[in-house]
Image (cartoon, rainbow, N blue to C red):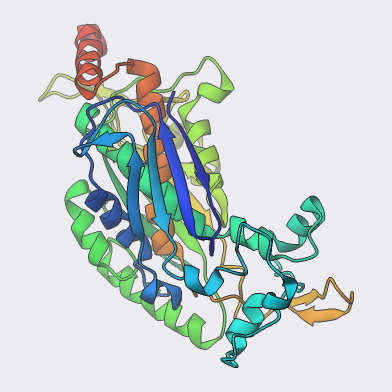
Length: 406
């Protein structure tokens, strides 16, 4: 079993992640993780924090000379702004009088940083988190609920993605298919692994040039209006063998596991596999992927891929295709109505530094979560204590498939 765990707060000293269960022999370096985190910071519509936030990565355990050793992998991502938050986020008790001092700078942001947050934001975890955990301040809630935590998932997902590519030959692609009302045409071709450098360079991580320009314009207008935008991301997995996942139990179905992982990303409100909700509008004769034998290769293939590469909770050999819908960021610049939890009076929601649109980086996070789930499913299916053993097991499995079923 591949398991992962994260710890830390948005403005704490560091984020920490542990990835357990990967075989030995995965080649990965700190530079690989750092590059993946840089992709997470990209995207038109990101906030000011992305301009100075540098992810200071340290791999603390599980690797030797750039190769996993079979034990848990531990990764730390330091907070470059920690000196500003050392009192507010200290793990040790702090004299309340120190929190009331603005360090003599007169900086309103610094003063606000030290004060309790009592005007919860609609759409965020603030209010419910205060109720649930008995806080009189939203700070502890937003610090852990923050999407900053996804940096750790991207770091761990990088290791998982390297395993998938090196052991099975699987390559992942993440792209944006919608921002606000602007969407990629239904007949647009799917990007391939060869398109990843171009996607990384695109301001909104969109494969369609015309749609990308329209998305940028929509974000710019939203920024002028003092508002925020959501959208839809898609992750593709190329090279997956059929038979990963299972129909035997609900929690072993791969589509269920992928959907749960994607829904666990901050601000994600919906997922679909393949054509998903569009399939529900079609008749059966137009909804399913017919099967034929390829006259050139002699192998079984589908005439379409509306199922998104999964049937009965198992991969079917086609390209895996999953989507996630992200709501607009709940920290709205023009501030929504709320109440002050100290006085009970009507108020405007507190405003934390935030993005106009975080859909492009959400695609990178979704890719990481898909990598983690697939790594777990591959280890479950094929076993093996090393990358070489997993690769041999995959080859043996494929060789054992009866000729008429290939």
